[in-house]
Length: 82
Image (tube, rainbow, N blue to C red; front, side, top):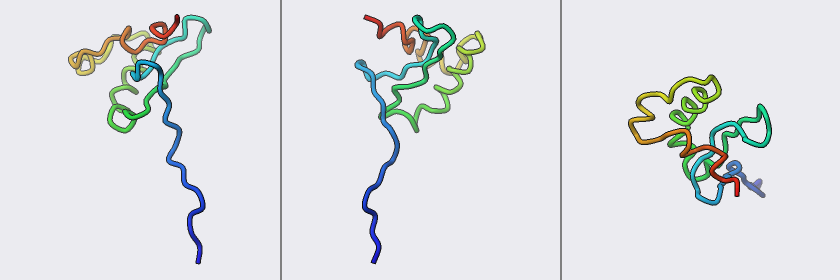
């Protein structure tokens, strides 16, 4: 009989404030972060992906995302620099 010796459901990454990170790194030109989704990923992935796309393209935050109170500084990697 065979059994599963190990299982893995994927990496769950977190940052200290446990809020996702999306934005260009202020210390690495051209590097865009989209991380820290541990515990949120499947629920927030569609909205966070649309927010990230807008940030990469220099477009406004999608209206429905902004209506939920999410703004670029809320998810910016710059908030973690200390």
